[in-house]
Length: 463
Image (cartoon, rainbow, N blue to C red; front, side):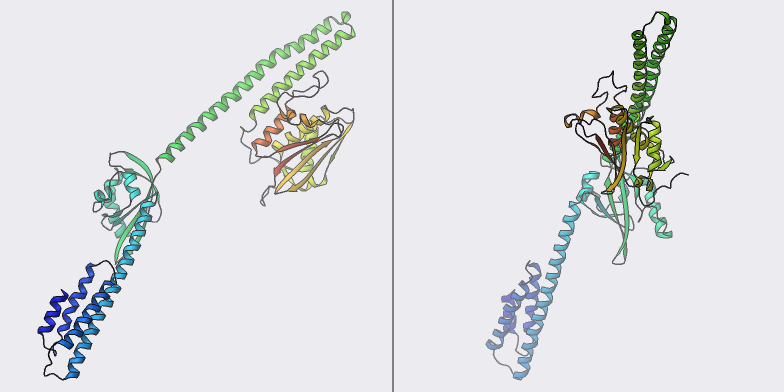
């Protein structure tokens, strides 16, 4: 092409702008990938144009006209070259941006579909291919309703027309859960959100779809497990209640029979036999207490906390707990004034304090003692401590005391079910809190447990 241009230039008189034929040569750079190819071709065309000026025989035209002609030719050639290079660079930049956008769209886990006003699919990313089973080539140019089952498929065109006429939205800019139709004919649940945009004066819609089959299956399984758990809890409650009732019945018979025997044989029983009868009844009461505690233990964490329950100031709550635990008059209860400045839920904390106070009394080595209840705040939580001046516990037994049916003293010395501390620990675990024990032989015991500080919108104390 350059040779043809040079030949044409030679055959054209100097007064004619024959060098403009090189514009075609420069424009051929449009088929070359590199943007600077146009400048290379312009440089070659410049060389040919100058060669024509020096090699072509002179004509009658004035020299200044010939020179101006060549200058204008060179200006035109380089203008075309720079314009072409600019266009090539812009096209390369656009192609690069489109490539990056395509990589992003194809790399997303969500399907992205673009459709025109008439519902025709204009773009369809790789995630859509995985979700629907169709390739982009199979869907592009087709109506998007091919991806919808009835009744969405039948209503789609009417909905689009209604939206264009009235602007009433059902999905656009809102999003909802709908159903999709795969290539194999299977229907699946999906989340769909649609946004509207204007491009070159035309309205387009971009839909983002997410296959939620796994999520819906997990939700169904969770609901099934919750239903099973609730049924199991109800059955366990019924079983615990029935078992407790049925087991208590013979215990009451034993208690009553021992009293009748003691009355009928009063003249024949010595002191030792009467003590044995009383010990028998104590064992019966212990068994009844154990059954009651087992029933309470089985329900910890399975009964929803009543939002309308009573809230008390901490000092009153501890005093009520002491009454609940039958604190002997010989024991002094010292409650920190700080507890009266806060409000706490009546349940389960009253039962927690009652069990800790009762534990301090039962395992005290003296007939009288002192129990102190204090509170401090640390890390956004209340830390409550129940301290006694009893015999203390060796550190090697600190974990053991929280186990069910555990007592470190002989059963004939301490009447109890061995469930109190186990219930306290289970309550703490249910609410995500902790309880710890600090003790050593001869230095009493200090049980410390945490409880969240109520939010700023804390409940008001019940009057």
